[in-house]
Image 1: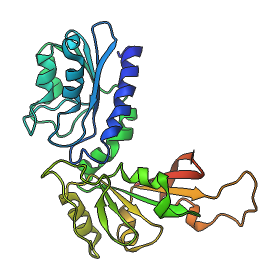
Image 2: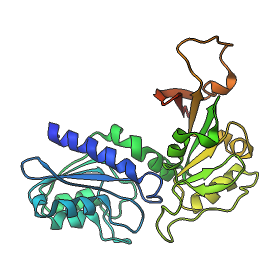
Image 3: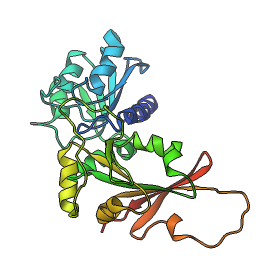
Image 4: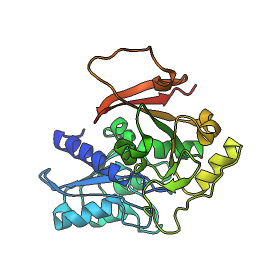
Length: 291
């Protein structure tokens, strides 16, 4: 069972893993915290982009010798293969940690998996620690693996200027690709992905949703943001949108209402998952209720 310190560390690992959203693809956004043998945090790290060190290596580097006999708390099962970087399970073994906690098992893990190899090396392993919380960050990446296509978010602002909205600007940076209202396609974080790991497809995406999704997936995108309440891209991908984000501007403590406008209501087939104030806006987040 995870201790209170370890649960706190896992939530910290989840929080810092989100720093990789919009740049790690096609790799997953992962966070890691190292606790020393007394349960004190001594290092943390996250994965930024494909080709860079993974979260575990960054956290171990920060911890140094204090990792020996300690615990690694990581949001995804450590990798078990040599890719552009060595396997993270070996880095943990070499650092002589005594315990590894992981939130989500990696469906792409090679061979017997990183967790199994750690156990064979005599390291205690805990699986599924705060898994549902870790999926807040890893969920879209896993969705992309399962479906073979990017996770699609449709976002628009009601009653405000979408071009000048700071909240929408920040949202773009958490997605691999952004499809603008005029059909232009850009990286959410310009130049943020690793070399030879990602490319921006040339528009237009055509008229066939299946071909459009394949084009986006082959570019290396795991997450795509489609902007605008009504345009060619939203119509093309309408049936495969996984999440809708609606920013409603102009709210006031008391105002005359003309009734619920269709443009600010949750579309059919979606359930409201979150509502929160965001500066002068109210943000609605709705998830697709796939049958």
